[in-house]
Image (cartoon, rainbow, N blue to C red; front, side, top):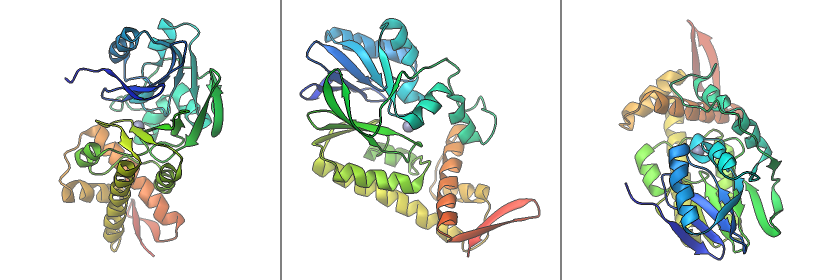
Length: 299
Ligand SMILES: [Zn+2]
C-alpha cells in the first residue's frame, strides 16, 4: 500500500492521500478542519497519526456526504478530540445520522447486510448552508454538488482550493467502474457546470491520485459528462424494445464487460433507476406492468 502523507495544496489547504482523500484546512493556531473522515477506525488512526505528526489539531470535521468512506470514522474523531464540531449540509445530515438509509436506497427496502452501513449513533452539530460560512473566523464557500448523493456538498477555502469530493470521478475511477454511481443524473450534470463556473484555482476529488488545476478539471469534467452521455444513449437504445430494469442492468453488465458483486450490482441498478427517472420526467419513456414484470419503453 502507498504510504500516506500530508500534502500542501496552497496556504492552509492540505490533503492526506489515502483511499479517500482527506482534506485539511489548517488555521493559524494549528487547529484544523478535517474534510471527510475515512471508512473505519483503523483508517482513521493512520490519518490521525499523520495529522499529529504535522502538529495539527482537529477542531472541526466537515462531511461532504454520507457514504461511509467519507464519514465512517466520525466517532473516532469525536472520541479522540472532545469538543470537535461536526458539519454537513442539511440534506446529508439526515443520511449521516440515519446511515441505514444508504443501504435502503441501494437495496430498495429494509437495509440489507450485503451493503454495509453504520449503526453507530452519529450527530452533526451544525448545518452549513450554501454560500459563505465562517469557520474559526475564516470564510469558506459551501456549494451544493448533489448528484452522486442527494446533497453532496463541496467546500472552497479562502485560497480558492475546492474540495469537490465525489461530484466528479477521476480518470482512474471512471476506468475502473465504467458506469459511475449517480443518484440524480440531472443534478450531477448541473453540479459539474457549477464546478466549472466557480472561482477556484485547485480542485481535489474524493478519490484521485492528484490535485487538479482549472484546465485539468475541465478535461476531467468532459470525461465525466461523456460517461453520463454514453450510458444515457446506451439505455435509451435498449428502450427501443420493452425492457425491465433488471434486463437493462443485465445488458449494461454484459455489453460493457463489467464484473460485479452484490453491492456493485445494486450500485448499477440504483444508477439505472436514476436514468429511468430522468427519461420518465422528460416524458421520453413510458412503462407498464405485464405478466408480473414492470417494463419500460420509448413513447
Ligand atoms: Zn460517495
